Amino acid sequence: GRTGLFLKVAAVAVIGTGCTLVCSYKASSTTTVKLRGFVHLLNKMKKKPVTQAEIEAVIKPALDLFEKVLDAERAAFGDDSKTDEAKKSLFMMQLRGIYDAGNRFSPVGQLFCMKDLMAGLNMRISFADECLRVLGKPGKDGSAFKSYGDQVVIIAGLPRTGSTMLHRLLASDPSTRTPLWWEQMHSDPTPCGPSDLFTDPRVKEVQKDIDNRSIVSPNANEELFKFHSIGATEVEECAPFIRRYFNDMDSMYLSEKCIAERTEWCSSATVDRSFIIRHLQAWLSLQSTKFPKDKSYKWVLKAPIFTIFLPEIAEAFPDATFVFSNRDPKNVIPSTCGLVEVAAAFKAEWGNDPSILMRRIGSYVLSRMR
Image (cartoon, rainbow, N blue to C red):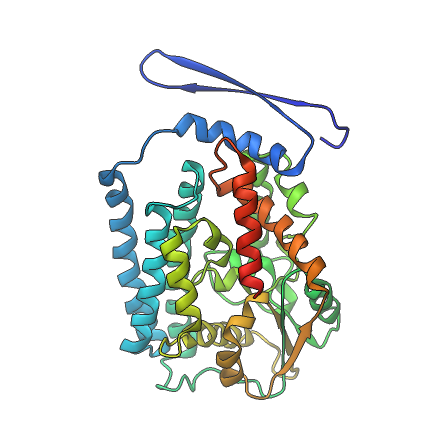
């Protein structure tokens, strides 16, 4: 792709008994067209209307699993009925938005999104069970979880403002502790001590998942890493943890109705959004059980989405240091659009005119920045 030569991809799919379809695709050298090309073939192979019965068959297991999540989190974190209501409303928006009329998911995108949603629910159950086992049942005020005094640095602000570079620079200080990618992405939440962070067997498993993205599209990681590099042992923002609850990366593809409902959920004064930050606080407490007893660490946490939850963060970490990264919005917006464009190559329904979705990306990013 770097040479500007055309890529030619052939795929064979069986469509019905004894009938074989051969698809040939030529991709140009542009980022999304290269990425979209390979996913486009998968979508063509699966391109058929989703029936209501198929939707119900997918949604029912998700709803059943979500009820188990509520039970586990009530036991581990002391969440009450008001918190459960906030969780349910958020979950239903994200679940309905995948299949509701007007959604912008491709067939493959719907599969990916449901897979991520179910994985997130299972991770929440495992995490809650581990917290209950190691930390014990908290009081109603979450008193089992530490506030860490002034030992927390929160990096927030708009995306694409250099916050990742700042985060990783601060993480180079040996007196700090930052979440790693694999710790947030592996299904086993067992905490790991500092000496084993880079040698734990789970590291290889998560790195394999990253490398396997090339199965869907050979240049997937190459294009993504132009915006944000990831690796199993890389210092990483808290977004992977938060996506178990609030998957902001998929917001743009939801139906318009669900996007509006989620916007209201984020801004409403009556919604209890604190559970996301309290559970993050519990995650820090869980990891801290493996800290050396004679040494203290300063947690350095970063995520642009923290901006939505600043009141909740200030309540959970009242003595934290807040750092806001800044950059000219005229540069932030196109840079963010580029990152969303790469992600959209996998999950979005581009249709016959990609410019339609490109305009949607621009409109969505601009509204979020506001």
